[in-house]
Amino acid sequence: MGQEVQEGGLPAYWVSVPYVLGLSVLTEVVAILTIGLVRGWGEVAPAWIPVIGGRRVRPLAAVVPAVLGGLILTFLFTGVPLGGDRELALYGVIDTVEYTNGVWDALAMVCGTPLAAWGPITIALAIAYYRRRVRGVAAG
Image: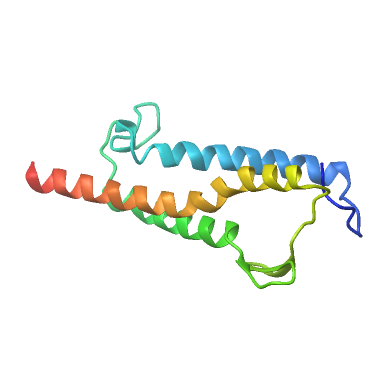
């Protein structure tokens, strides 16, 4: 969709379809857990969860995975421009993708920018969650 032809081609459907579906499910799960940092159900485990249902969630049990996940998301989706259409990413130096025109490039930028912001936002939410929960325990 708007990308210049790359050598190597695309992987087979039996590889790419489960990969994309798996990433979609993983992304939705992480997004829902991130929402738990700002909603009330992130403070008390839902009653339908075996063993821990109805109990209060310890602040560090939510904050530590959220900060680690935020760091992983930050490193995964943030590339450092090196110049010459190359970026330094978590998995090495990569060539940037060329698009057929500026509209496709703008669309890719609009769709990709929230991914780069997801990690730092998750870390900020984890810090706010921790402050809210610890202050609430100290005051109460």
